[in-house]
Amino acid sequence: MTTNKPLILGISGASGLIYAVRTLKFLLEADYAIELVASKSTYMVWQAEQNIRMPAEAERQEQFWRQQAGVETLGKLRCHPWGDVGANIASGSFRTLGMIVIPCSMSTVAKLAAGLSSDLLERAADVQLKEGRKLVIVPRETPFSLIHLRNLTTLAEAGARIVPAIPAWYHNPQTIEDLVDFVVARALDQLDIDCIPINRWQGHL
Image 1 (cartoon, rainbow, N blue to C red):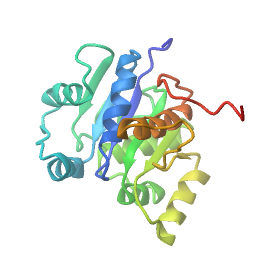
Image 2: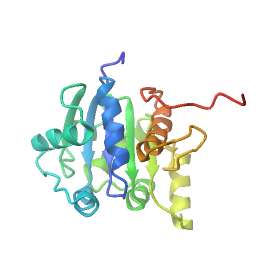
Image 3: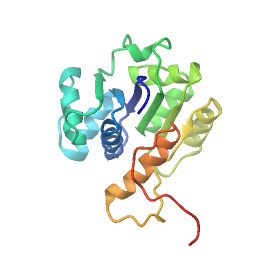
Image 4: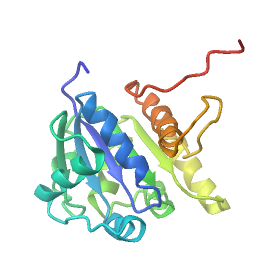
């Protein structure tokens, strides 16, 4: 890693928080600086999927996310309360590498497509769009309704990169982590970040 600019990691209340955990793991191990914001509904998803209580306090969240990712000391991590719309990442004058929202709920997609900023995650994503910075959206939903597709199209037209959580199979996955890591790697590709050891397609042998 050759830049001091941080990357914003947004985590919304979609199912599949393993995508966020694996993303954080690889970024921290590669010594990136991460500004993390989880939406209010993320707390409920942790409880429902893993029976884990996510702390509300930003200071305790850093330890929580590092424990989930299994990376205690590498990289830099700063966590923000979902309602702190006065945080650094809420301003366009705070320079970043961009932002990835993983996983991204359809509610968050809809609000971003409509230009709404009801919490810090949405505001930070809106800032990336207005500043012409990279915004990567990883929606985790199936099937997509016509409303979902139109909202995703609006975001794509505004400059966001849409990377659905759809794994490939040509890399011969053996574990759930193999499937998840492929999606994470392809999402980070959109930010020109290559820090995940996956078997990329090399053409026919």
